[in-house]
Amino acid sequence: MRRIIALFMGDHSIEQTHMPSRGLWAGWSSLLAQVERLTRRTDSEDMLHDAYVRMAARVDRPDNEEAFLVRAAVNRARDSYRREKVRGVSAGDDAIGMLRDGAPLQDEALMAQARLRRVSEGIDRLPPRTREVFLLQRIDNLKYREIAERLEISQSAVEKHMARAMTFLGEWTKDW
Image 1 (cartoon, rainbow, N blue to C red):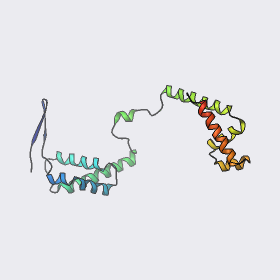
Image 2 (image 1 turned 60 degrees about the horizontal axis):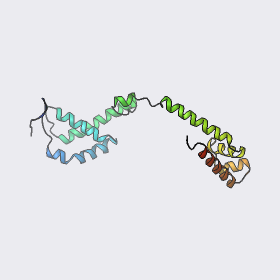
Image 3 (image 1 turned 135 degrees about the vertical axis):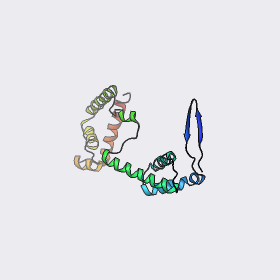
Image 4 (image 1 turned 180 degrees about the horizontal axis):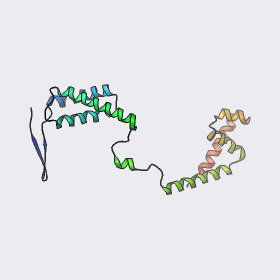
């Protein structure tokens, strides 16, 4: 059924050419499930909504609204997939978000450098064996067992050296 609804917002009027049928609204979740199954995309609901907006803007109404919506949503998803393959996945249509620089601010970078210097000073103040164990674990990513074998000490000693280093560095950088 075609109806014209005029919505008045201030001095402007917006006209819509037709309202969706009750069956279409009642079956929206099944349409969405069908589009999700066919496209396997997380933005299936957006694709279905875009298809509905396009259908609502048409002057002539399709014979089978449900089939039209599913086909239009799937086609839109395919277009998006092709566009993403060429241009890459975008973070969305948020233009300001695209302009944002992900690099840290200058003061944040200076603070990070100061913290790094503080940690480096703390590592230099560790006893030699504790520093060696700490660096082998944190920098070289060796397991406690591997450190114990390399330094010819027990795994328990490695654990104690690591605990000592972590406690000292935690205190050393506490207010940083």
